[in-house]
Length: 311
Ligand SMILES: [Zn+2]
Image (cartoon, rainbow, N blue to C red; front, side, top):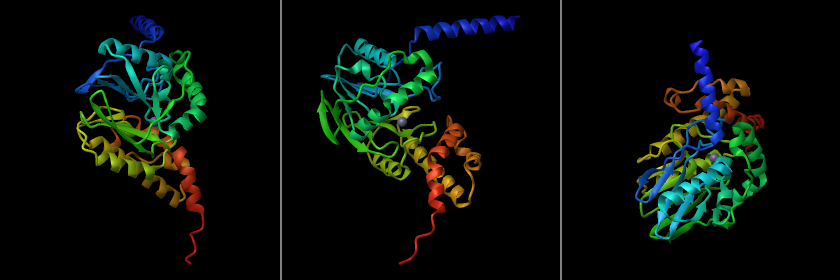
């Protein structure tokens, strides 16, 4: 009986929570003028409404610069309202780190703000945005109500620009996707890496080029940053998240290549035991399965090709 009442209470509470569709947005100060809204290290669900991603903002003398608009229209609206209410300043610019849906589907809230992205990201949003939207609707439900694709309207170019007293460097990279934009604030030492870096959350690879990704990590590692805001997972004050992401990607590639060379099939590679050091990484097992399905078929075909004749 007691159990039944508890179940009923839980159902009522979660229904009430879902009805309000309020994302739990709590600005975390990570450096002077710099805040992060940290998402959960989970997969998309009807409970988290897609808030599984980190977005950030920099409060400059001229107004606020936002990094990524989140997974839905509701998110973008709540994010912008929170920023403008707590800072008393207007948002003057939005940067989109890449074309994955959890990072840009809040764009509707920023239709009257310049929205910067790399050309490859814009292309990806154009080509896949509608599919992403219906997929997220399926996974998170009504949190997505009214969400549609709003594209970036400005091209982000590599270079440095001072905005309201903050010297911001935009860095054009790739590897997680064909267009990955990192933003480095030289004034505060904060690096927004987008999804080139994951912290204690397994990297996702549906559009990955692992070799390019590893090169981009080298570039990020060489920057004199004090704080790093990864695309997913906790903010850090050291290079550990970069090293962990590199370690994971290298292990993943070795596992896949060895599997292909040894003639394993996809299911067998998916059963590869997780090394001890990745066991505490969120979603390591499910992301391995997804990565095998994304990356293994190409490697398998490569390993079946006859070795190139010596000339
Ligand atoms: Zn991503």
